Image (cartoon, rainbow, N blue to C red; front, top):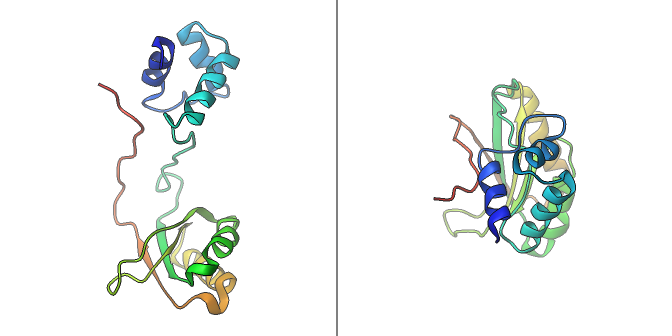
Length: 156
């Protein structure tokens, strides 16, 4: 990383500017073009310095009170295909594989859902169960009880 990359990292630590053109705003701040800002961020992603750039909404402020991590026990040999199918559902914000911790924790597929009502969240869970079909050997839903502060990279 050169000095410009470091300045870009510092400028984005609290997130991208909440404007219609966040890369342009960063470019103006740093004396660069928007194209260079995007190219540098892409290069840092390619190098593994930045893992991802994405929105982190506050679901509670948006009216989603029933935010649940659904966990599923599915056959390991089917998890890639099943995960792709579940991850494509429009209400699943993220879906990923995690290791089991047997015998206490048999779950290997995780999918986050967000509902404004318990009924809406329950319906989403039922739709995931339908997608998984007989591959679903067990599941639970772990609902959020408080908001955790989410932040990006912090450098000294």
